[in-house]
Image (cartoon, rainbow, N blue to C red; front, top):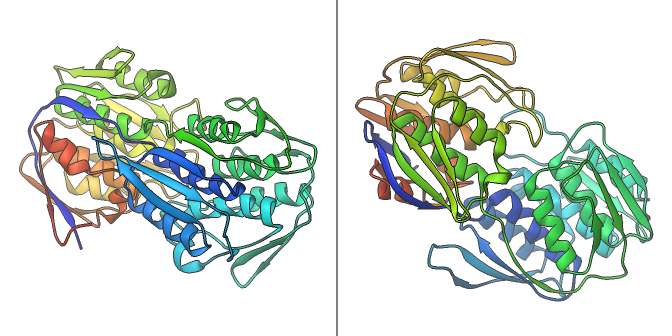
Length: 425
């Protein structure tokens, strides 16, 4: 099993090209199920989760061919769902990636039937799919849970007014995709506003869908008889960009995150600036410059546009070596502090009080062997390892490979010393 070996202490300098967004690419690949015609998707990051989604879709009978790769390593995938003959998403694949549930809405809308295993993914807390089921039932679907599977049937779905009990990104995406082929108009209230939801909506519109309000908490979808093919480019990954900017805030130096949009990550940039990182926004990306030890900041995770839960571990790593004490409040996932005990092994002074982590910054961390517990925890440990004295070994980096494209190569190009030890991805 692969691990990272990091020799800490190097400032980061240079340009890093930000990859396509995993959390946008996965639902966009599922959108290919909605049409018989080809959907060509550019800027798809070559990640473990993307490979899992491709295996899932190909197992259903979708053609999912790689049509070249850009100079920065991003794939172009050509999808065609004219010969889908298996309407089941099996446990063996869904258990490894919660985003697999995103095939539920498109399959039900186009084929009138879907069987999807209850999802898995990172062990960061309960992420129920009851809001997906509630919404599809409001559109006329008959759904039962049987032996760990969601079994759904329907005639043509019908438009409905759906108010979710909580803000759910995948729930919004699943229901929006299903509503594209429903009869009549669907209104999604309390919808997720994340940029990745907007990216999916833009792709669906390119395929002929009629969607208004994406990016707000009220999305209106007027159903159409069918969708056609399209050519679409996935947005850059704002979480990857935030991770590299946190890294330079911790280590010092100067890094240009190329290709990312500042307006899609305002909460992260505001907190990094509050902590002392100098930010310069350009049309081509974002500069981050750090010439002194950061100051501790308080963050509270919440749905977009507030501070993202996917950036919580990374900002905690910055706080761990900052001046002062910062509070990190996690309101989204109840188990998303599992990285704390690993950061303590590096010398971080962190105490947990319910949903709040109290992080007292120390002047130096020291290298040790630690274990990644989930995707974003991995990124936080990498940042801590980059600033720690000596060598840090991070086990179980398969979590990291789910969401970061060639992180060790990108870090080394910025002057870090990171080695992948093991048998490869």
